[in-house]
Image 1 (cartoon, rainbow, N blue to C red):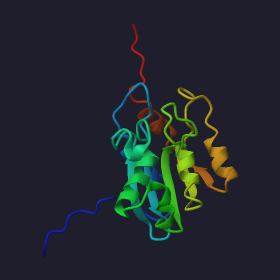
Image 2 (image 1 turned 90 degrees about the vertical axis):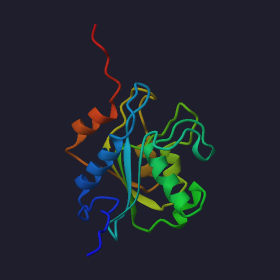
Image 3 (image 1 turned 60 degrees about the horizontal axis):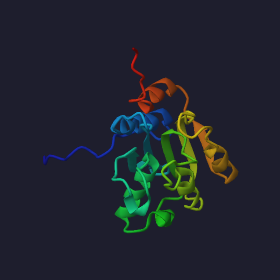
Length: 184
């Protein structure tokens, strides 16, 4: 019998939202910790085929990827990888994403970027309904940009946003790696 390499992604049971969020958290752990950002992970899934389409984490891809100023966010990295795979600009990946594509992200998608980069909410919305469901681990802490109204913007546009319960403490700890204040 010939040796077969392991699959590139773990096998996660269909509908196992904690399993997919756990894999997104594994991605977040790959993000370099820093006091000026969150460590976020994301997983793009074809819910019908239960197939992982793409993964991403904060700062995975180089700054200024595809002409956007600033650092790359987890969701953005997922989208860029799909775009590159299909030789499309990022804003056209909705043309190749399966109709049941869902996004798992450890932190709610951003609605404001200090870098001037396009927000993750805008990236989802410009796909014109290609992503109808977003599963999030935690609400974005108000550390950098104040209250994030991204969830409301997504819901107002018809995107279902669901919090995957039971992992908030783990996700917050990974997300804020590098934020610890040294005690004197």
